[in-house]
Length: 405
Image 1 (tube, rainbow, N blue to C red):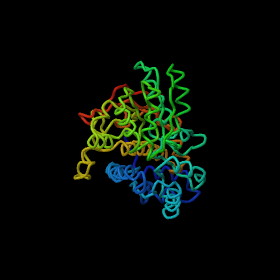
Image 2 (cartoon, rainbow, N blue to C red; image 1 turned 45 degrees about the horizontal axis):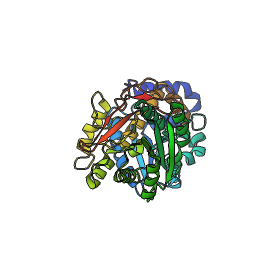
Image 3 (cartoon, helix red, strand yellow; image 1 turned 90 degrees about the horizontal axis):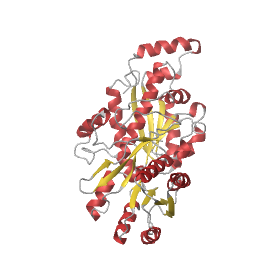
Image 4 (spheres, one colour; image 1 turned 135 degrees about the horizontal axis):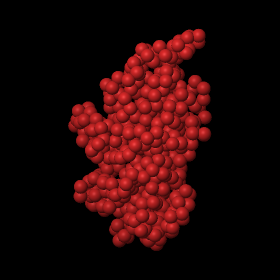
C-alpha cells in the first residue's frame, strides 16, 4: 500500500499559501472535521441480499483507514442509506446528503448501473463528487463521458473477453450466451460475439431470459438443441443461473457453464450445493479479485480477515467475506489512494482534482486483492482470472493466470 507521510499541518500550510487571497477554502473547513463518503445500497428489495452483504465493508473500512490516520489526518465517515435498488431513490439519497453535509462529502458509492447513469448529468460544478459503485457496466468506463466515475475491476465486456480467451485456450469450439433481459444482462453480448469471432469460436446460441422467474425448461431445451461446449451466463445475481445449470445437468448436458462477477459468489454456490446437491461442481467464471480466504501475500485481505473475525463474530461473515464486499474494499482503497495523493499535492478534494489523482494510479500493489500490480486505465482496472468451484471443498480456486485486457 502507498504509505502517506505528509502531516496535516504541512497540507494545510501548503494549501493556504496558494489560496490565501481567496479566503479559507471549503476543503480546509472540511478537514477540520471529517470526510464523508456517502453510499446507497439495496438493503431492501430484490437485491437486498447483495446490499446486506456489502454494507459491513463500509464500517470495517472506516475503522481500517481511521486507524491508519485517515486521509492526511482527517477521519473518514460513511453515510449509508437504503435505495431498494431504485435509481431514483439512490439519486434522492445523494442529493439529500449533499444538501445536509455539503463539502464534507468527498465521494459516493452507488448501488447500480441505473443510478450511475442517472446521476451522471448531476455531476457538475459544486454538485460533482467522485463516484464508484457495484457496477461493471462498459458504458461507465469512459473518462470522456463519465469523468468522475470509476470501477475497481474489468467491465462486463472485459469479463467476457477474459472468459472467451480462456475457452479458446482450453480448446473450446462453440459457445452459447444466456443473459437476463436487462441492461445488466445485455451489456457484453454484442462485443462478446465480435470477440468470439476473432478467436475462432462459434456462438451457437444467444438466449434472453427474465432476471427472475425465468422459464427454465424452455431455456434449457434451447441450450440442449445448440449443445455448446461452453455456456456463459450474464446478468444474474442470486437466481436463475443455478437453476439453468441444474436443469442442464438433469438433461444430461455436458456443456461447461461459466459466469461473470455477480454469478461467482461462494455463499450462493454453497447454499445451492447444500440445498440441491453438487451439480455446480466444475462451474467456472471470471473474478477480478482474490477470494477472501486466499490471503497469502495479500496484506489487505489478511487485515480484512482479522478485523472481520472480531467485528463480525457470530455472523456468516466471521470467517469469509463475500466477493461483493471485497469489490467495495478494493474500490475504496483506490479512492483512498486518490484522496491521499491529492492531499500530498495540497489540492482540495474536488471531483476534478480526484479524477486527476485517479489517473496517476499506475502499476500499484493494492494490497493483494489482485495477484498482480494494477493500473487504472479509462477509469477501470481491466484485470481478472478464471476460477472454478468445487462442491466438495466449497471453494473457488484459480484455473488461469491473471489477465489484463
